[in-house]
Each structure stands twice: as structure tokens, then as C-alpha cells.
Amino acid sequence: MTAVLMVFVVGATEAPRDSFEVWLVDQSDTAGLGYGGTVRVYEGPDARPDGTIDLGGATASMCLAATGKNPVRPHMLVFNKKDTHAAIGFVASGHVAILDASTRRPLACVLTEAGAGGAQQAHALWPTRDDKYLVIANQNGKKLERIRTDYASGTFTQQPSATLDLANCTTPNGAPCQSAEIRPDNAPICPYIASDNGPVFVSLRGGGMLLVDWRTTPMSIVAEYDMHNVPPNGCGFVEAKGSIFGDGGGGTAHNMDGFSVFRLPMTGYSPANPPNTPAVQRLFDDESHDRDAHGTAATAGERYVWVADRDANVAEVFDARTGARVNTVNLVSPHSADPTVDLFDISPDREWLFASTRGPNPLSGDPHSSQGADPGLLIIKITAGGRSGQVRGLIPISNVDAGGVQRADAHGIRLRRTHR
Image 1 (cartoon, rainbow, N blue to C red):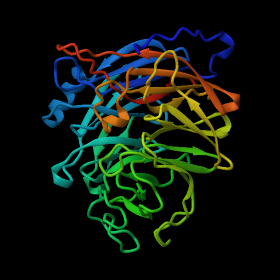
Image 2: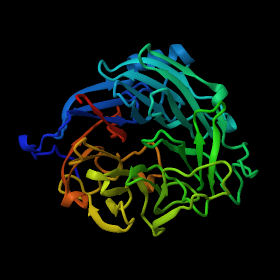
Image 3: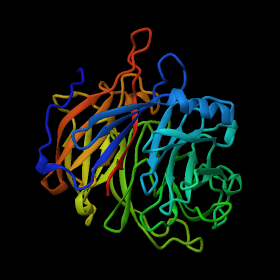
Image 4: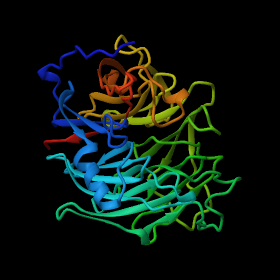
């Protein structure tokens, strides 16, 4: 089905307390270049278009000058705590580009280290809550890396001495970080740091998880979980009611399908603990065909947690206090019969949920899970106190190549507060 512009108009009484922008990453190359990509910027709850950042222009020039390589396939996007700067990870080339969020101009570009098999992949990244560092998941390189960030002076320094080699390290309990029986594939998927600025949660492609103290040099493991306790392919962490909710999905050769949700406490981690401590609470597991958990969000008051299923075109909703699954929200609508919702972010007033929707030629994730019909930005009105929602529109993006093929493929999405 062809995507259509949203027609719902937000009334003045529904305006958020804080103004904000939505930044949406299109992974597809800048037209005709074979590198670059774009970020579309939208303003406010009705997502008024507010410009496009061509990553094949000044950003690519900066990366080429700094690293000798062009940046390829922008994948994930984060803002620092003060919302003054954006950082973008390029999953195919391994670059991390840092932009001034107000001017949208690039300030720095670094390249992840060569890791397992020589791979360099900046799959995802996360800022520490004190704005001192960015933690980088070098996916196929199987490394966790760190960049020192001084936003006031505009100085961004890669710190190789801090790198944790996830393929070859040993845990505090003396176990190999990666092994067939414990954690079979330690490609880091997504890092996450909670509001207490505690350890970074690092999800792993083959299942299991490591919690890492990002302050030490090199970074060090403070908790270890095996594949039997934490599901594979997790890329959704969110904080709610004093817990960290995470998910596990499909989309890789050994785990084609899956939808799992679990939670862990925010505290209680120590390298002196035995493995799998504190205990994981598995909330929901469904390994049936055509399921793939991905993005997460918490509603007002952290009352409910939403987890996107990009294969089934739904969001599962969980009570953040009890952990019970309380609703399934259908994300198919007149705006798209196959939105393939990937990642979420929520407005400051927690009334509007925004989601990236995948394209017909996805550039990441197994195609059976990530192939969508209408690449763009899905807009969802939260209802029933966070327990449910209604799709109010989809703003399409497009990048048609010289052969007439639609290459647009939305993925990373984050909200930036422009007034506090």
C-alpha cells in the first residue's frame, strides 16, 4: 500500500509541555554516491518537516578526511543528555559522526577499531548520563569501545585503551566471554545506560548479556548472563518503575524468529556475584514464526512498556509494575498495511509515540523480518493511559535509484527537546 501523509491535526490543547524534534535516519545511500545517507527532521507532535541532513555531503567529507574512508549506512542515532549534540553510528563502515544538533553541522568523525576478522561496525551507541563518554557497539568486530566527549570545547577523543574485546575476554567468574555453551556469538547489538548512570547493559547477538563498568580503563565486566537467561538479538532497553526492560528477537541465521521480553533491576551488580545474578525475570516468550521484537518505549509515569514487533506489525504492552502483558496494539492502519515498525521514541509528555518504518529493500536485519512496504515515520497517539494507542498517520520518505527502485529504509529514530 502506498504511504500517505497523516491528516490528523494536533489541537492546541494537545501540544506537549516541551517542544521537540524527531530525527529519522534513512540508511540508504545518498543518491548516486554509494555512501552517506540522510536524516529527516520533523518538528512537534504533528511532525512538520523541518529539513534534511545529507550525510553524503559535509559529514562524508569530514569522515573521509579524518579516516580515509567514506561513511556507509547510518544506522543508529543518539543525543547527549543536554540535547546539544547528535551522534550517528554507521553500521557498514564503522564510523561515528558527531553533529551540532542546532546547526546540524558535523563536528567530528572517528572510525571503530578493526576487530574479529578485521570487521569495523558502529552498530549502536549510547551516551553516559554525565555527557563524558559515548559507548560504541562495534558489532561484527565484537568490541565495546569508548569515545571521550567534551561538548563544550568540541573535543571528541577515541580511547583504544578503554576497549573491551568481547570475543576474547574472560569474565570475573573465570569463564570465557564467548563460548558455544554460554554466549555463542558476542557481537554487541545495543548498549544502554539507565538514569542512575550505572553500568552499560550490552545485548549480544547469540544470546546472553554483559554489564560493563564504562568508567574503568579498559572497561570491565561487572555482571554476566548466559544464553539460557537472556535471549538473543536484543535491541530494546527501557527503564520503568526501577527496572530495566529488555527484549530479544529474530532476524539472524541461527535465530530467525522470536519475541521475548525480560526485566532486571537497576542495581545489585558486582563482579563478585555468581553468573546470572541478580536474576532475570522472563516476562514473555514467543518463538513462533513471523515474530521479531525490536524497539521499546515507556508511557507516562512509566506505567506501561511498549515493545515493537516489526514482523507481526504489532506492539505488545506490558504493565511496568507487575510485568504482565496487558494488550496487543495493531499497528496496521489505512496509512500502511505493512509498516514493519522498527524503533520507537516517545514525546516528552508521553502522549505521542513515533516509530521508524522499514522499506521494501531493507539494508539491515534479515529481510523476512525487516522488509516493509512504506518507509517513513509512523505517528501513534497513546490512549487508555498508556495501555493502548491509535495510528494517526505515516509520513513517507523516498529514495528512488536510477533504476526506479525504492531504496529508502528508515531505522534510527530519536527525539530531541528544543526547549526545556
